[in-house]
Each structure stands twice: as C-alpha cells, then as structure tokens.
Length: 354
Image 1 (tube, rainbow, N blue to C red):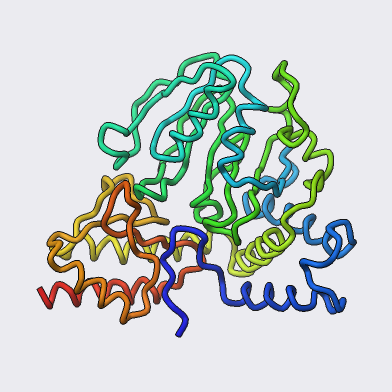
Image 2 (image 1 turned 90 degrees about the vertical axis):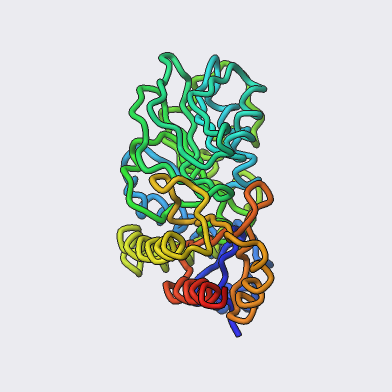
C-alpha cells in the first residue's frame, strides 16, 4: 500500500514523476543507457538542464527579466555560504525566524557584519516578527520564507532598497508571489521539487560582481552562470527529476493552480486542529505555514493510541522535530488532498476514543 507521506524532506513526489524517473534510470530516451550513466555533456542531458532552468523561470514569472536559474549542489546550507561570499562586502541584514536562519547568520558572520533586523527566538520561533526596521546601507536583506521545523511562513514581505535574498527551500512553487521583488531565491530541491542532491538558485544578474574579495570558482555565482550550470558535473538524477516535477506543475496549471489546492489542504487540517480539543497548534495562527502544520496532542496519555491509528491508516512522517515535539504534517505540492482527509479522519477518531 502506498503510504500517505507527510515527511518534511526528502519530500513526496508525484507518482507520474517517480514512474518516469525510474524508467529513465533503466533506459533514458530509448538510448540503451541509464540516465545516471550518460555524460552530463551529452545533448540529451544538456537539453534536460536547459529545460529545467527555463521551466523554473517560467513558473516564477521571471523570464526575460534579467534572471538566471542554476541547479547547484550542497543544499541550502551551501547557499548560506555562497550568498555571503558573493554579496556581503560590509553589512547584511537577516530576519531570524528559525533554525535555518540561525545557520545562515552563522555563515554570513564569516564575511562581514550581520544585523538581526528581527527575531522570534524569544518564543521558540512560533511567530514571524513584524514591524521591524530595516537599516539603510545593507548589502542585502536575507529572509527565510517558510520554516519547516516550527511551521511558520512569511505572508507579507518587507519593502526595502537593499537587495532581497530569500531561502524558499520548503515553499518554492507553492504560492503566487511577485518573485521579481527578490534578487536571489534559493531552494533545496528535496523539500518541494525533487530528490536531494540539487539546489535551485535564481539570481538577478545585476546584483553580482560588487564585492572586492576573490571568490573561489565553485563559490562564484558568475562562474556557474557563465557555464550554464555545468561548471562541474551536476547531480543529473536530481536535476532530471526536478525537471519532471516542474513539467508536472506546469501541466496542472502552474503555481496559481497548486496554490488553490494547497490552501484547501491547509484549511482542512488547521480547521481540525482548532476544533478538536485533543490537539493544539504550535505556530501563531496568522503566521501558520501552508506547507508544514505543527501541532501537539493535548493529552500525552493518548499518544500511543494516536500513533497506532496513524500507522494503521498508512500515514508516514508525521513526527515533529525535536525542537518542537509533537507532530508536523508537511503538505507539499504533490501531497493529495485525500491524504490530508485521511489524517483528519484519524484525528477525529482519537477524539471519539478519548
């Protein structure tokens, strides 16, 4: 039985994507060779890379607007370093909304001054700071749009004259935004786009080339842009599967269409959390993530019973992060509405058994 996969990452992928990807591993484009055997310089794979990069810009509405899309490696953790390497000359601002923001701040401090423009650490990151002031003269302002661990999501982005950088690892392609407000967007594929191993980086080219330091080639965005994301051997399977996922999303109707479904999933689950006295939501209501719903069970004595019901229903990956405890339902793009309905049924069932 295929399980209902609420894992926070690596994420659930569409069944049709998994089927096509598995076929390509055996025989890619009827070549008699596996996708993971062929040269990344071969015309077949170059076409994959070009299509994946073009689809990313198309779905974000950034074609012909001075942006380049790259598929790199190292995950968002590498981007914490690369962003600062390429942009931080004097001082950068960071909004601290969770573990990943904390890690990004740590890396940036190696290159210059870092100003925390706001933080929700005082409440264990269960809300998004608001009303904070953005200092003038920043090299860039860094945000994390969605926080998988704590279940919060930025709903309104600040207006600033500083270049805006955003880690969108866990909600990329999940909702419509004016993506042209951002100068750099990066996202590890494994949260909402593909398997682990690739990182999508979307860069407005005119933000680069302004630091005085020498940048090692592997860390230099301009080098990767000049080589069409092929400076080193890319993660071919992760890029190919991400391309398939982006094609799947485009065929569904793009970001606008998936946002409608994501809203329905989130409303269904949060309604149950709020109405069922057996559960308590963790994140502030106004800052709740549509991707990652965090909640706890009100009576810990019922935890074993609830966990047993989850297992019987084929629900996987619901355990919360150790920083929060409880449960975390990750409702990424490929998770069917039906799976959320099954989870809600189990939550209703535990109330009846209490």
